[in-house]
Length: 522
Image 1 (cartoon, rainbow, N blue to C red):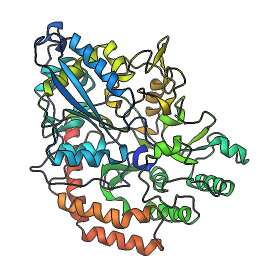
Image 2 (spheres, rainbow, N blue to C red):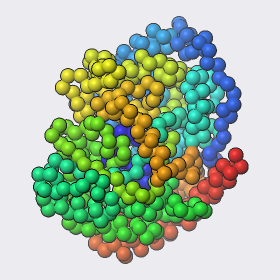
Image 3 (cartoon, rainbow, N blue to C red):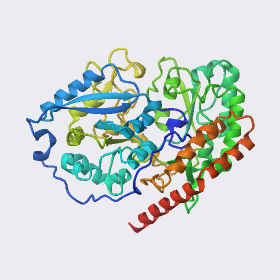
Image 4 (cartoon, one colour):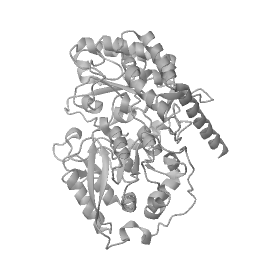
């Protein structure tokens, strides 16, 4: 997700935490094709604002992640009044679920048949929700009720990544980014302790290890980090995560051979380093129990070290609660290749039980074409939640990122429209052009399976066992809490094999091969 995550579970999309439960769904679901040839009607008469001026008022229920900002309901009341003036007779009920619970809560809500209208989703969670049939097919509805939005997707050709068996079940974002690993630390505290690192000099696992031990020596009682060593080794060895239960392949493997991460040599190396950090109290002792947002801990000064991405290494305002906090960032293994983010890194989806999908899409179409509405949804009420300085949206008064009453709200990222986005104190003018430029560096490359939709329907029971074995056995290994690494990994590998790993890999390999073959035929 753009924005608000630090630490391996959220900052970069590699499956180190097999965190989602599975439930069975009927039928095989694989990446489909979308007919983008049809020209939607985008004439003024077809716009949502001019339809059904006497329609009955309804309330649209939206779900996002994070904490609800204090002015949220007031802002969305204004959104309601504005879209009503444009002919869309809706109110909004805006709900938030804390990030650590977000994906699991969505899965549980869908399983129980809850009725809501629109939600934010991302990557692995979206694939699981879509695979179990939790999202509404939009093939007919999207061009009919959101013709401008559909035309944008047609031009950018991004809907395939949100398509299952030919059914469009999500609306991806359209921002180009790469989230390769940056190591970050509190530069102000390091300077006080005489710990100096030249810009860009922390590049390897050894460099990170030395820095962490220096910080621990200087601040023995501080909570230093809650990030395992594994993401560093993943970058070093150019491992490509499939976003699917700890499976991936190596960048330099022309056959894209699907493998389990726990069987790779770097997994043992990472486990040894994590144990060293845990034993030396560099990794927080409560690392396996702590569910507080890692981003919040970093911004609140509760951690001295983090792993993050180019976005937050170069954000003008990293969101610290105290303006005296300073960060230093360094790109890890800058010469190694790393895949760019997928188009479903941030995605909007309509619940299959929604009674008002047409109005949701009309709202989204207005958002695609109306700058005033975009400002209202993204930035809020001018003078109350933001102020303008030229074209730049600033926090009003003494507000900052951490105290904002609306701006930078969680889950907005799939709404982003680069044509309308204003510079902010976090993302100044030119920021997103630089993000795009960074993603286009020779070492930042498209995934060879970008857009693949991996089905779990034929292996759902095996995946459930794999997830549970990971929670029970794998996670303690990755965070260095086991007493002896080698026998623990050997036992873990055997448990995964006994739990059906070979069937999982064979199934996923077949899907990868079919996807590559289909792309070659295109």
